[in-house]
Image (cartoon, rainbow, N blue to C red):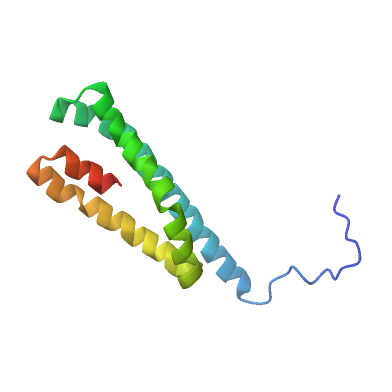
Length: 123
């Protein structure tokens, strides 16, 4: 049971078309969230393929996870500064562009059959 203490009941209600804007923003946010999760899960599928393609030992295979998650540690503060300067919308777009560039980095890495380039693209 919700109890309102000394407030106006109309404060939190969006006016007119604002509900559609909130819905669109929520859909975009949910889509980006699932894309982020999908990219993270793809690392688990890459490990056995990289292990056989490059004849890697267990320590070298774990570099895939290390490099991917190390990027979060290293890029957290620079990303926060970019967020402060550009705002939320543009920083989400820049993040998606970064993901696209990283995914495109797999093409030359595959052509050159270079494990190091794959790790750079994962970062």
